[in-house]
Structures are given as structure tokens and as C-alpha cells.
Length: 94
Image (tube, rainbow, N blue to C red; front, side, top):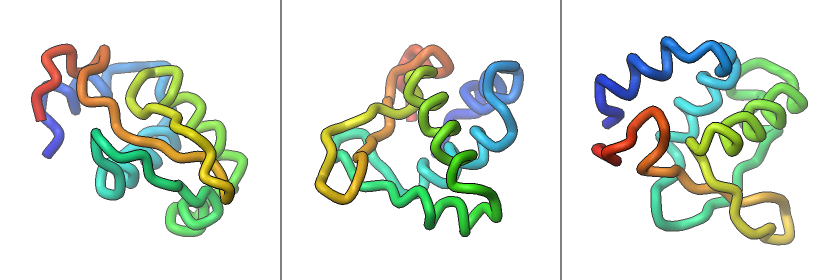
């Protein structure tokens, strides 16, 4: 579960768009902190009823914000994992 303080910090941050936060909340349910997993951007786009380009920009923003980490390509695309300790959750509490 996401710590309450982290949710509050995410909500206050003006650099994260609502689309970016929606992508992040989906990823929290699909990724973990240890294993890189393939993320299908077109599936996320369909799930969120948005464009694939919006999902792509959101993923880039999440990587820059150190909320997710970009892993190695797996042949079908990029892999990602969650970052436990980040600027919104410096103690790394989950």
C-alpha cells in the first residue's frame, strides 16, 4: 500500500500531470521493487482510455521523477520497476 504521506506529496507536486498519476497508480498494481517487468504501453492506453503517446510521456516523466526505473529492453519493449526510495518517499516506507 502507498503510504499516506507519499500520496499527499504526489498530490501536491505540480510537475506530475493527472495522466502521469493515473499511469503511476496502474503501475503500482502491476510492478514491484525487485523485478523489471515489461509494460505494454498500448494496453495501458486502452485501460486508461488515452493515447499511447500520453502513456509514453507519462512513463518518461515517472522515470525522471524517480518513481519508476527503466530497465533493460526485453525484445518487445522497455521494462520497468518501482523505485521504493524516492523524493516523495525518502524513507522508502511501503
